[in-house]
Length: 524
Image (cartoon, rainbow, N blue to C red):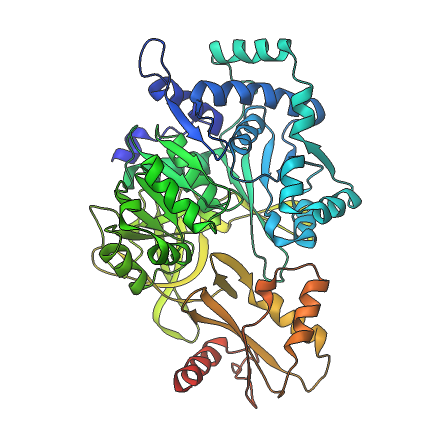
C-alpha cells in the first residue's frame, strides 16, 4: 500500500532527483544539507549535484546525440555520480563499464551497447593502470573523453546557464519513463558480457520498492565501497540513499579493509552494504567500536555464511541481514529487514513483484523463480547482435535460481540453473570456462564438465572435471591471460572422472556432476 501511494510512474531518474532535492535539500532558509562525499572529503549538497549535472550534461550533449549510449569508466567518486545524472538529464544513456574485467571484455561491452564515447579521468586511468584498456578502446574506434579536458572548457557563461536551469527547476530534455536510463552488464553464456537495459521506470520503481522495505531517514549515512558498474553498488548503495533523502559516502575500493573500518567510526556511518567476503574480513580486523554507530548491515551478491553472520553479531554487535537481487531487476527482489527477518533466507519479495515457480529437470528440491514487476528490465543486448534489444517475454524474467518459498513468503535459494559461478560477488560464466578448456585440449577424446561449489572465503570456486589425468593448469592460465580475461576464469581445482555424466538427451548433467564433486571433496 505504501509503494502504491509513493510510486510515481511519470518520473525519470533526473526528475526524481529534483523532486527529492525540493523535499530534503534544505535545513533552513540559507543552509543546505550535505548529502554526498567521497575520499576527496569535499561534501556536496543536492544543489551542487544538480548544478554540476546541468553544466556537465550540456557539455556531454555537445559531442553526443539524443539517446546515445555513452560509456562511463570512473571509480566511486562524486564525479561519477554527477556524470551519471548529467547524461541522464540530457537524455543520454550512461553505460557503466566494468573496468576491472580487462581490455578485451571492456571492448566487448562497448561493441555490444554500440558505445562511441567513453567518459573517464586521466588521473584515474594512470592510477588504476588502465592504459591498455584505453588503447584497446581507441583501436576499436571509441573516442575517450577526459573530464579534466571538459573542466578546462567550462566558462562563466556555462556556470550561469547551469545556475539558471537549477533555479527554474528545468528538465533539459523531455523523456519517457520507458526510455533507456542506464545499461549495466552481466556475464553472458559464452563469456561475452550481456548488456542489461534498464528504463527510468525500472530504476525509480526499484528505489521506491527498496524505500518501502529499508526505510532511511535524513540522518542516515550510507557507506558505499561497491563499484557503481554493478547494480548493487549503483542502485542500492548510491541511487537509493540519494533519491530518498539520505546521505552517502563513496569509497573507491572494498578491499581497503582497515581504512574502511576507520572511516566507519570517523563518519558515524549508520547503514552499510557489502558482500559476505568483505564482511568476513571486517570481522577479523575491526575493533567493535568501529561499528558502534551502525544500525543495520545488509549483504548481497553472494550467499551469507552462518559464521559471518554470527561473528558480525557477537564480535561487532551488528545484525547482518541478507538480500537478493539480479542486475535484470535493477536489482532488489527481496531482502530481510529489521522488522521481518528470518535467518537462512533472503527475505520476502519486494512490493509489486509477481512470482511463479517452474520445475527444473533433474532438481526435486525447489523450483526456478520467475518474476514480473515494474523493476524488471526492458531486455538484453547480446554481443553477437550489438545494439538490438531483446525484450523479456511476456514481462517474466527467469532468474535461474532454484528456490523454496515458505508459508510466510520468505525465499531461500537451494540451487542454481544458470551456468555461472559467483566468486567474491563477480559472475563468472562456466560455459566460457568450458570453452577455454576445449580450445586448449583439442581432442575428440577430451570431455570435461565445469561446476561451481562453495568456497569458505570466495563464496564459490570453479572445479573442472575431465576424463584426462594430469592436466596442466599453467596452460589454462596462459590462455586466459592471452584472451585478456579475468583470472577468476581459471578453475581452482582440476579433478579426474572417467565418464562425465550426461542426460538421456545427450545434454551435460551438471547437477549430478556437482553432487559427485561435493562428495569427493567431503571425503578428502
